[in-house]
Length: 479
Ligand SMILES: [Zn+2]
Image (cartoon, rainbow, N blue to C red):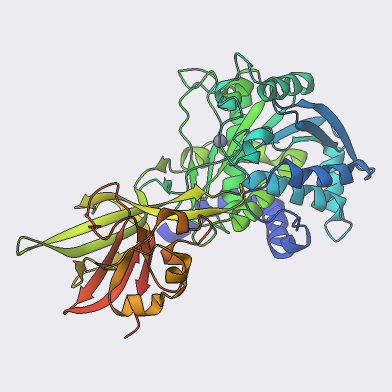
């Protein structure tokens, strides 16, 4: 009986959105057909989307309108679609390095251009709603893959003063549309977890507050219900990976300001998903989430969703590292200490804006039992050992070419002193190569197990080298 009651409780919200669920499942299965192939990594820029927008100008379904230009004179466009009474406004990438939703918007355009078995739903959405898209609000930031615009302004703190032309364009467009719904599309730190269940927060939602008291009104409640619907539908694809963003009121932010002005505003933050560094799966989840929301708005089905569905979404939490090595034995002055070591991986730009390398940093050491790793390894029985430093500094390209990296690893040499000019900045870091090698400046180099250091050490089991830890990778050694 108790079981039946539980079953009813979990099914009830689902009954109201059966059409959305089957639509989402269809989209999940046929997504590849809509995926815009010209966009295939996070480091996209204005030059990548411009030809796609130009193409839409020749498609009678779309109306493309130039809104203005960024500081560096890149054009911002509004793309309009549909004829319905309910207006929906979506804008993406006001932070230049948050591109996931921008990719998904171009997938949406392909969906609406298509002619297939989903025509009935496609036509329903376009009959009941009018969709307005402003992709890549911050093209100058996107050009150098940075959060802020080229004046170093965080556009999402410029909704009041409107100093930057991009923020001004976004506000003017919003005011001219007076939309019923707004979708504020961002990316968040990939290390956010869903509450304390330690799963990565792949999608975090928020119906932003419109005042310090975080009060509810009819407009905000519509956003809350719509999020409850989206979370209910998406959880079948990313179970346990949906969280809620903090709703502290920030009057300089656009989402909060738009909510205050009476548009039901929904924040979607794309976070992390294991082995999806370029966020192509999360892009697909964005695509499905947005289309399902459009369908629900068109049919007003979200109104049946209880507010509790939103309230029960866990908050974003901050207890994840990229790599957590548990219980490593570290020897100091003849005494063994069991330590957990937490490592995060950060991207470092190379000479071309589209290229980057990843470097690890030791973030914490000690008892980290309250924390989790996106990758975790139980190192019980493994002892940390320093790698050796190659005894001679490499000073010419010929000397470098003569190095047998495989042999260095066999000899437990982990650090190669090298003349700085010889290091090709575009060369991949050691952990991405076949043989793990870390370049250093002098033959005097000593590795220190310290917070802030780049992790590079061996792990031994019973006096035999078993693994090399370099940056965020654990490399198993062959015998
Ligand atoms: Zn953002």
